[in-house]
Amino acid sequence: MRIATCLIALLSISAPASADVLTIVSFNVENLFDTENDPGNPRDDTYLPLTVKQVNQAAHDAECEVHNGPSGFYSDQCKTLDWSDAVYSQKLDRLGETILAMGALPEVIIVPETENARVLEDLVSQTLPGSGYRVVQLDTSDEPESRGIDVGLLTTLPAAGAPTAHVIDFDRDEETCGKTRDILQVPLELPDGETLHVFGVHFPSGGNPYRCRIRAMNNLNTLVAGLPVGSLSIAAGDFNVNCNEGPTDSFSRLLRIGNWYASPLVRSGCEAPGSSKFVDRFVNNWNTWSFLDMILVSSTLSPSQPSDKNWFADLGSFSSMVVTSEQIMVDEDNRGFIEPRRFDPTTGRGVSDHFPVVMRLISRRD
Image (cartoon, rainbow, N blue to C red; front, side, top):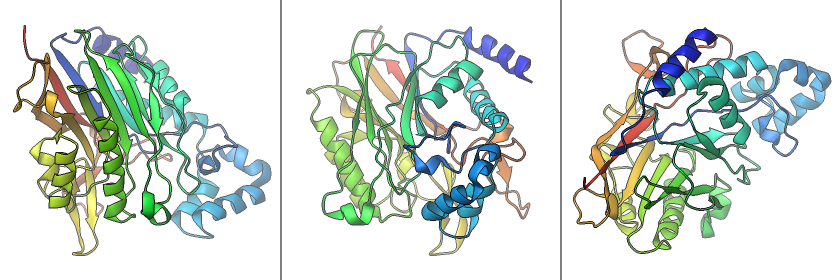
């Protein structure tokens, strides 16, 4: 299997991308942890080999209960999951196979839910050798009550400056919203020398009030407002804005304030397509879809706005990406409904609970 994977990698990587088209992908990789016990990240205790957990099982179980409660799925998973080197390698393989199946490798991949830079370095070295991807992952978020994960980035574009992590300020809602992932800002050099400012996000989950995501979006808008006039910007990642929140006037207003443009799909409601299956507990309808994952572009990249810049975003190219059978599963009642297949450590099947999303940037002038 590894030989076949490497052969596919070499064949895919050998096809160079066009200098006139750049592909941007956001791919929430769902809990990409290494197998090392990081004392500075107590929330990685779930993702350790059983051999490590069993060295002092009682102390490990007590730590699990501190962060996951005394019982229930997450507490049991923390105590019993065997996140071995072999399982970690399988997880990397599934992710790498998905990226390779996209065709020509994307120039930029925003990657929420990564523990540290090492996991992305392992992904590249194991499954994408020779790709030219460099890793940006600052491992900075202060999340004492979350899972110790951050937003990372893979890119083949040169750096146009140092990356920065921005802590989200929830202001008066700090007690309600707590801590969340930092906004990652990465300036990249486009083929014509122009700078593209990439903001990678992973906003508070749906278990938090909508106003927490509004606060996070306001932080993003403040950051982009501080860029030089006329800058090219994209914001991508897991916004966690569900299919009931996306169509609201409040979200439209947030887009207008930030001068963001997006595909109409992200505000189209709860019918497929989407990047994640959404459970609407209020109407007891599990078969709804949300574009929790989005790619937003600045007005300077909008095809509907005048611009002296060389690039525009093909908003019509935005879509979710289902490129391998491992990404999907049929509902447990076998009615034919499909949903993203989470990675299963016991079988090695599945990839992530999110589908990747994609958008192209195209050269405006020859």
